[in-house]
Length: 266
Image (cartoon, rainbow, N blue to C red; front, top):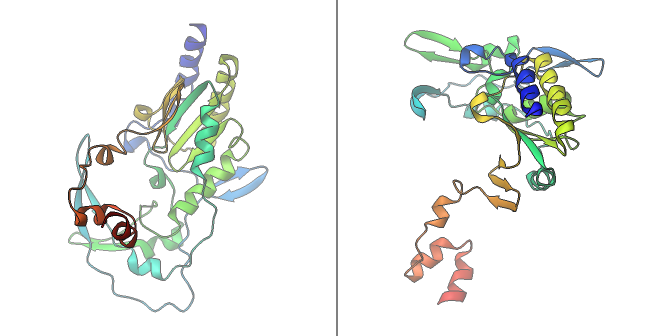
């Protein structure tokens, strides 16, 4: 009971790391100090040299259901992505992270609020993300989904800020973070360490999708329980209710290799 009350007080003292609405999403600072060195967090459009101007395709609007219906602008970044070189930044391996999380008794499951949208685009590249609508010409100031190297920019930020924690008392995969804790005594220390780092870079979490000091939870399409690791039922629902094939053609269409299915079932 005492640990619970102390945890509540700790979270109240760090309410600025949570975003209840987009108005609370201030954006990650353009530059931060990590290990005594200045680290630039902005996203850069790494276009290749001598790229000729291209005529952009028309943009469209789409609706997205998220508790309520929101109208979301969908931008086709195909042309600009072709003009950009691929950034080979290493992305995390999920399997080992899931196993490491399961070995710890307590966990804190944190969900980054709108992930990429908290990262700012470098000012000189904002005009490259421009698009036209009836109201006029607009451009993105924050990183949307779709541009090449968007995930690499985000992963680099996470690796630099939480590098000393990842693999020790934390695991990260995209917008999901899990603090690994072995005892109640360590819980408050590890949570405070993480929250203070979040305050430094002004990265926000979604309080509706975060939980602290629990023994079970979801991470990267896996359900982590005390009894073991299972696939998230919501992710494999379609396969669970898949009807068995009743013809040779159906069998062939549900296997990975048509040749294999012919030799096996005919």
